[in-house]
Image (tube, rainbow, N blue to C red; front, side, top):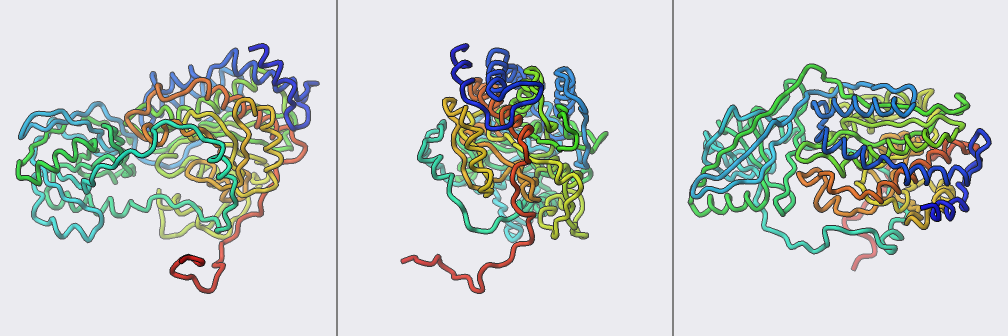
Length: 533
C-alpha cells in the first residue's frame, strides 16, 4: 500500500495547489491514503442496503436513509447539512407478498408487488385471463370477459437466447467508440410518457370487475422488478398489481391457452403513508476559503425501487459520494470553492429531486399552464427560453455517479470540447487504476441531465457495467452482493480528486452556451437514410 501511495504521489493533480501550504502531489497522496487505508465506502453501502434496505421515494426506508445520511455528514464535520423538500406524493412500502398457482397443480410463483398498488385484503384466489393490453384500442376486445379474474396484461413473448455474458467490463475498443461526436441536436429528457395509458388501463380493469392484474418481468431467470408509477395522493391504482417472473408467467399463459383453467392465489400486505407528501434531497457542504468563488458539486440519487435493496442502483453511487466527502474532510485538504454534496430523491420516478434543485437555485423556464404535479416536472425541460438565476454562475461544475459499483474508466464530456484536455490531465494520476478515457459524447438518464439542460457543466462518469444492466438494475437481485469493494474505493478516490481540482482551479470549468430552443436543421427529411443502397 505504501509503495502504491509513493508511486502515485509523483503524479500531480492538474490544478493549482490546495490552500494552507499543501502541494498538489501531497493532496493526491493524502486522498489515496485516506481512501484506501481508512475507507468507509463499503460500510456506508452495507448500512444503506442490509440495514435500511429499499428506499422507495417517501417510503419509511427512504425517511430512515435521509436521517442517517444527514447524521453521517454532520458526524464527519460537514456544514450547512439540511434537507430540501419538493412536492412528490405518497409513501408506500411492502410488508410481504406471496403467490402460488393452486390449479391444475400447486407451485410457488416468483413475484413482486407493483409499487403504489393496494393490498389484497388477505389471500386473493381467482382464475386467470391472459388479456394483453398494450394500448387503449385493445380494451374493446376484452369487454365483458374479465369480471372476477386476475388479468395477465402482458403479451407473453417467447424466450430469447442470452447472447452476451451477464458480467462484463469495458474493453479499450468499446471505450474508444464512446469518444465520437454526435452531430444530432440535443433533445430534452422525456419522462412519464406511459402515465396516460396506465390510468386508462387501470380504470378499464376496475370497470370490468377484475380483482387484480399481473405483468410479466422484462428479464429471465426469476428476476422481478415491481416498478409502478401512480404515486400521487388520490391517484393510486384501484387494483392490486403484481409482476411475475417470466418463467412462471409463461407457464400460466400456456396452461390458459390449452384450457387447463389455472387458479392463482395472491397475498400482499402494503402500507401507504400520506403524512408528508414532500420528497427530500439531502445537502451538505465543505466550506471553501473564498465564498465569492462559488461552489462545485457531486451527487447521486439515494432513492431506489422496492424489489431489492437498491445496492447497485444507487447505494453504490451514494456511498461513493459520501465517501468522497469523508475523504476530503478527513484529509484536511482546503479548497478555494465550497464543495457541495447532494443525495437526490425521486430520481427513479423522473429525476424530481435534481430537477427541483435546478429549478430552485439555477434557472427558470416557462411552465405549461395545462400541466400540474408530476406532469409539470416532466415538462420542465421543454420550456423556452431559459433564464439563468443568480445561482447559475455560482455552480462551476456538477459530477454524478449512477451506473452501479463498477470501476470508473473515465468521464463523459457532454459535447463540451473545452473540458476534454482538462479532464485528461485530471485523470492522468489514475491511469494505473484503469481510468483514462475522456469521451466527448453526451449521456443522459440520470441526475446530471437537468443541470446540463440549462448550461451548467454537468458530467456523468464512465463505469464498468459489471452485471448492472443484465441482473441488478431495478430488480430483486440488487443487493449488497452486487457491489465491488475495490471498484468503489477507486471511484470515491477519483471523485474526491475531481472535486478538489474543480474547487481549486483558477477559473470555473468552461461552459457551453446557454441552450436555446432547437430549430429544424433541414427543409426536407428523407424517409430513408442518405447514402443507403
